Image 1: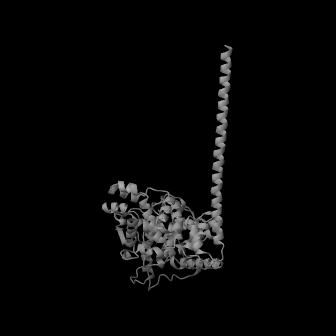
Image 2: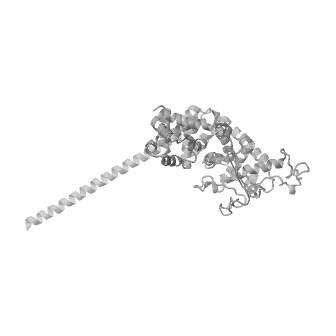
Image 3: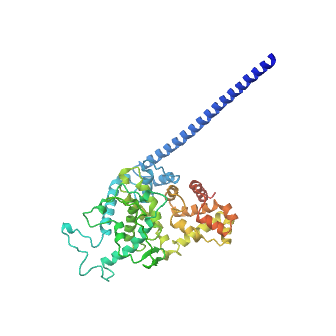
Amino acid sequence: MCGAGTRLRQSTEFKDSVIAKRHYVSVVSLSAVEHFVTLEIRLKVSKVWTGIEEFKVALSQPQINLKNLRELCFSGIPFEGGLRALCWKILLNYLPTEQAIWDSFLKKQREIYTQFLREMIIQPGIAKANLGFSREDVTLEDHPLNPNPDSQWNTYFKDNEILLQIDKDVRRLYPDMAFFQRPTEYPCLLILDPQNEYETLRRRVEQTSLKAQTVARNRSGVTNVSSPGKAVCTYPSNEYEVLPSGSEAHWEVVERILFIYAKLNPGIAYVQGMNEVVGPIYYTFATDPNTEWKEHAEADTFFCFTSLMSENRDNFIKSLDDSQCGITYKMESVYSTLKQKDAELYLKLQEQNIKPQYFTFRWLTLLLSQEFLLPDVIRIWDSLFSDQERFDFLILVCCAMLVLIRDQLLAGDFTVNMRLLQDYPICDVHTILKKAKDLQDGA
């Protein structure tokens, strides 16, 4: 019995020893993992701060080295300190590279935009009666029934058609985000001042005399004109939160930018989809941590959007579709690039009669803004804006998107593949951009 008791005691002590050792190993292992994770986090944070410092150094130079800045921005621009908003202003050729003149340049541009507001968002029929001004907009020579095409009233009614389409589109801009429905911190006091003759475009839409029909204008011109009997209520009264007097939502600011652009560019005016292009730019500037510049997000967005559209506007002009600068040529360029990079996949799409216009039209015209979530779109645009041949790089990005899902496309039939291309399955934009860069470098 004594021997058995000793063996039992030794067995118990051995088990306790094993458990203690396992616990010790477990603690040591856990400590090592925690140390490794902490080290990894520190390295990442250090890398981020190093990157931010590199941007700050590049942007602090009296004369910005554009080549160096482009190289930095291509890999992604930090949001901290308003770096992205500032870099975009430079990359979109809005801010000059000479830093000393930034303040005077921005002051002048913002004054110009204020003048646009004064000249172009005027409601005929509203005058400063309380200040003794006469109603000069209603005269014997010019009045709402004047058939003269040069009549101010005739122009006003034509503008209303464009405004209706803009209003319809901006109200549904990024519906998965509440941002555009929220009030801006910096409403346009010039427009909202009850003492002057201006008024919000929202009120103009509500009061428009064009209630007899709904007009939707796409790239082919004015289409989808519905009669009053078939018209539906486009803007339910409870669809959007009513903001208090003196406030305006972000979408109203975007609406104003697009309306002024349409007025200044009558040759193209407004085409459906432009709202998707201006949206990310405005969001980036309106969320700028630099409050001094954030206050002027509207004016700065207008000029950056105008600059971007000067490069991209041919995609929105139907008469140029089949020219070398038109959208058809660019869509075919995606397939010709794919043919060079992946002939097997190219032949498969050709065999299934999947034409590039079935999916690349939206990709190219809207700069991929409808294919990904807004933060991912902004990251893509960091690289896109950084490339000197930005629209050539966009074609490579589209080609990379195809190559990355080649296995699914090679295995799928027409229906499956069209579904893949209309609802792109890969969400990691960094993988797409890396592949596009590899294609650019000939890998």
